[in-house]
Image (cartoon, rainbow, N blue to C red; front, top):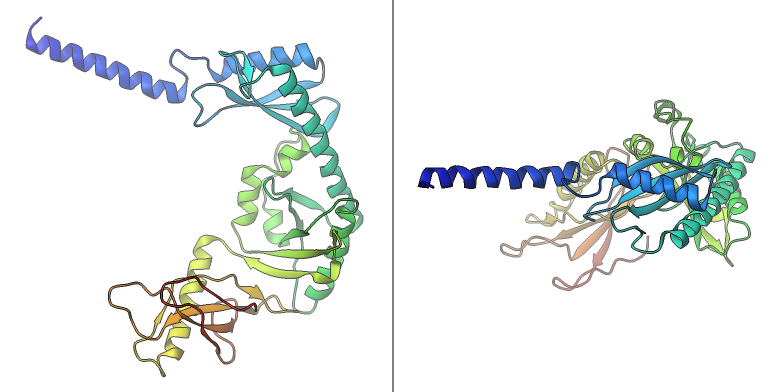
Length: 337
């Protein structure tokens, strides 16, 4: 074979390898595909839970090289969703024997559906529709537009509802997300054919709700029960809004500090901003700063001021100096607000 022929063959071989690598990502290229995992899951459902489980989705598992995440609906529980990993090629589920894994997944699905019904029914009795549930934290989303005049009463009302929701369980606290009616109205509806747990926890729904600023109400627990009077609210903003707010606050604080410290540098550190009690438009948080620059080192902030701002980041009233909060580049020691 000539040199040019060998180069063409090598090029063809490399192209084939690259094509197969791409196909592995997209379709499997010689390995079991999602379709085969789905068929295997349907076979398992017919064998172990006949007439109960219905496959509704199959997704490739990343970074696993084989197997798929299978999502089932339950014919006897419209709220329940069952998820498990199925690997048709290996004949396993979650790398174990499929019977036990499927039985446990079904139990978990029923248990979570029952808990979801308690949540939804409890808030409905309190006059609040649960429009979404965060699958990571379990926090519900409800529709509410608190104002300075109503926020205290609303927090107590939601707290009483959260106490009922968590009644009978040992908890350290609870949180409820509040979304405005205008945002809730534009949320994706989801497919009615999907189980309730799947619709309320859909990624597209949560993205639509969290894509705008919203309030999060948090409650502590007393002897393992939610304390309705402990409610506090904070505003949660999308990344770009947070950046814009932080830039406005830091610029305004730096301008004020510069009168006494001409070379002052404000740190990029972001503290949790809390709403002032009985308000939804006044935020309080720490701003860290360095009185003098430290050569080429970035300013971590060894001093702090406590500042209250409006929602745009404009300081309201005087800065409250906290003093030294860090030695050198050591750990931060901020007092509680």
